Structure formats: structure tokens, C-alpha cells
Image 1: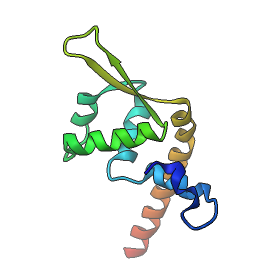
Image 2: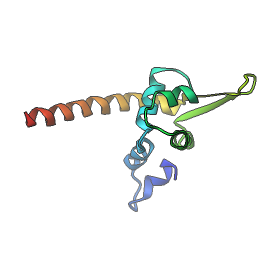
Image 3: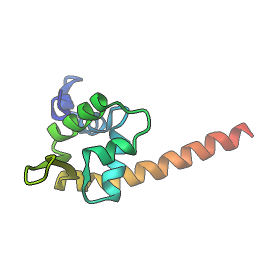
Image 4: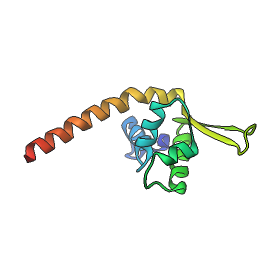
Length: 118
């Protein structure tokens, strides 16, 4: 199910649910962070940076991000083997500041939790 389909799951339009659905997935956030750091990455490059992620899971997560128009898959058949690479779309680029702010908030949250446990 694409994120846009989630916008009415509570019987009302909820853009926040769509946004959360885009980021929902064990590997999506880290995939997006990797693509934020590099303009383009090949499938094998992404896989190498995700310790514990299977090929099947990576393919699934990339397919979902592509279906949500967050990343774009480029296939170049002039290479042997065929070069498949991924990059953020314009919509994906618009998520970058949101992801960065979520990271800042998450760090503050964790710091607060661990500080209270000391």
C-alpha cells in the first residue's frame, strides 16, 4: 500500500499518516539517510552499507519508496552488468529537512531519557 492510500485510514484525511507511512519500514530511514549523503547509489552500494539487510528486504523497501515517489530507480543498460542506481526525487529532497529535524529531536529525546536514568 502506498503512503497516499493511508491518508484516510482513520476515516478522515490525515497527511501525517501519509508521511509516517513513507518513513515506516525497518530500513527506509537509513536508506534515505544514505541517499541524502550521496547523490546516487547503486543497489550493491546501498546493500553493503546495511548490515543485516537481506537482498529481498532491500528490494522491497526500495520498491515502496519508489512507489511513493520518494526515490527514482535509474537503469543504464550500456554497462555490463546493467547499472541500476537510485537517487532522491524532488519529493524525496523535500523530505530532507524533515528527516534532519526528526534526527535532532530523536537525539534530544534519547539524551533526555538516558540522562534521567543516570
